[in-house]
Length: 255
Image 1 (cartoon, rainbow, N blue to C red):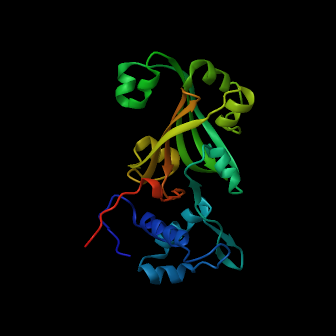
Image 2: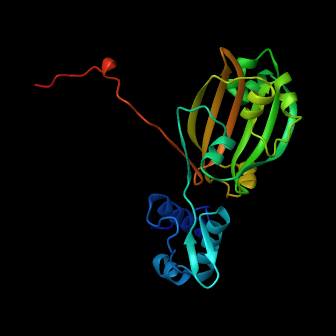
Image 3: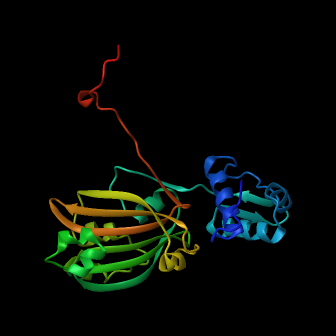
């Protein structure tokens, strides 16, 4: 790997990212013995301090675990969500055998003004409604993964705020406690970078790569939630299953 020593991202973060990608690609499987600090120093040509900081970050994120007298071992893989299913973060994390939780950052009513719509264009579908904002830092096994802003029609959001949002899933509350059944959603995923607030909340440097997911969820034909999610790109990925529709395929016959 070639390091950019002039980049704003510190050297140990560059090594952390490289090692994380190697784990995700399968270079080391779950349970495998990870290289020693000395081996990593030789591999990257850096100091022991830099290597220790890089490995400590992977331990903190849950990718590695140190066993006294035995060494460092690979602990887990990245969470992968399959697109096409309407599920929330808590459901996805539980389905992979991990523990979801959240820090509740803000709960408040929101008036949809032209200024708000300018900042978040998708809010225009709620232009004549009063909304309720639920803002959370969502975690997996205690580690931050996604910063969420979730907008609901005021009456639904206000009632949701009465529950323990540090432990309960929004979609489960909507369905089981409020009788609100989400039937479909429109979702876009784009690349982004961490600004000061996201960087602080997600424990990454400013400029760190993020996945930005915007979802507009419906109950029947009525839009009932707009969620804007900033995921750490190193902790979350999406998988898409594509099928060819032969009835709608057109082609060019070559000579």
